[in-house]
Length: 346
Image (tube, rainbow, N blue to C red; front, side, top):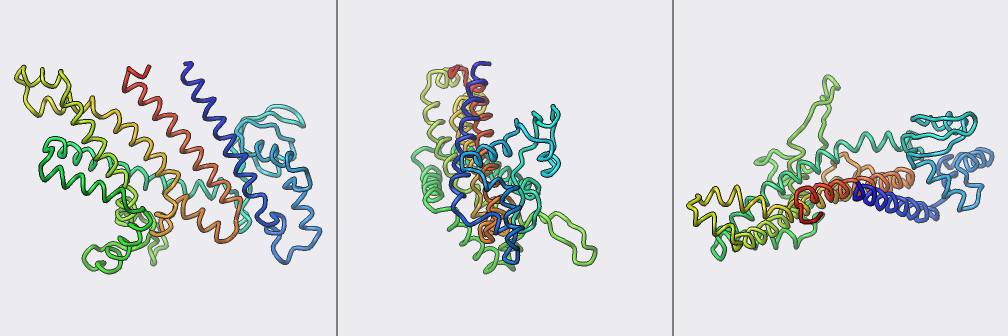
């Protein structure tokens, strides 16, 4: 219980720091009131927007208002709840204390709630990250075990060389190369497109249908680097475990090679791999921006880059906060899982 309380406190402080940093970074990028009103907006309209966004208040007050908006625990006036259409449980009369869905503001361009925009894009990022990490985990464990079992032989050299190459090239470079080679140059053989989202629209009926093949290239590209890391970690952990006394005892008792490896060596070698996998999954959720943009995959990354091009800063700020929250939550659960998997940590 004490461990959970400490981790919750650390996570809250991290998110508070990220919120303050995001607010300060985007303060100098244009006038939000003018961006919302547009070039045709008159002075009165701009002033009303400035007042509604608390831009007529000192910066420290603006920061407090922003933290109050994005925090799930909040204090709001009744009029704010009605104007912003906040969703949650509120207690009080005029000044209400509540637990709510974080309010990230409205888009300058579409005037939609940022939370709704990100909510539509989040499933695409989650599906892409899960597919990539499963590919990386399955391939990395297999290659790492083969490299460890055939240490010093050609399978080992091939796996190590491939893993070094996988960690050497940046993901965005690999994405561009694969999109060109497989999606354009060799399209007639692969049948894959250089860009496309999870769902396509039927031109006749107008209905959406899943296009699973569009997931192959971005998931492979996103999972290539963690696959290389997991391969190296699995190989190192397996080689270390093979030198333990209980492995030699297992062979001495007449256990089969498969039984010793699967039942004894692999479970004890998987802890570092488990930690790396959860860490990479957090990074995939938070950092697949360029992969999504290059392959046209509708997710948080593509929405963020598109918003940057249009100077739609509420969407960018909301995406950064959402990514930081996902990263923090996944690391929180990974630490808890690692603690359960390895009793020595306790």
